[in-house]
Length: 114
Length: 111
Image 1 (spheres, rainbow over the protein chains, first blue to last red):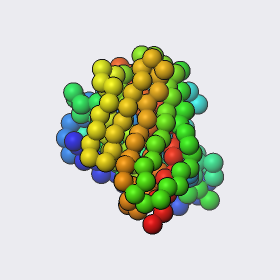
Image 2: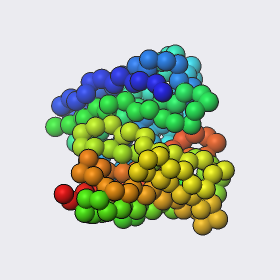
Image 3: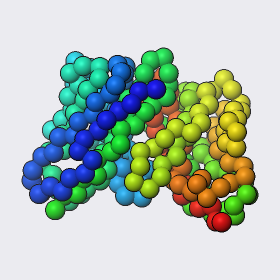
Image 4: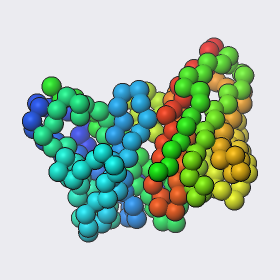
């Protein structure tokens, strides 16, 4: 399975600013996803990162708030824009290598907005 | 859309006993069901998975069963050990490959 490096591992940010999270995969993955996990909670899918086209967002998440890039099959970024304390959470990327159904997760980014 | 319910939310067992976690899904098109273990501060790790054409799968002390008719699947851990203590998440996926996760079960194995 693929190995995903995610950075930063944690950050403390001022409200109103933006943070970009990066995920680098050691092999080409057909699909990449971004999740949010609030403390003690489950994983909520933010969007599917599509290579070379706009991401597909889940209900409740919008591109202006969470712009995503995926320029190739091994790299993706998620930006959390105009942050507020409610955005404090863990953000995780994941990837899937064809033809396997299995996901591998990045190590996560713990974001605190003050 | 797909919804996955998971029970119980917390589970305490004595070391050596068995633990069972149950999930129910809503979308009958779901065809893949992984289970992830997440230790504190770490990423979720896949521990076992099952596809819809199989009723049961076992890997050493861990097994998963699937009942497609009832739309539920369960994780069974036998001979539990303290290192099994973690949060466990079930998930369901359709042909879109998106995972919808259950709410999680915090398992505590008491020594």
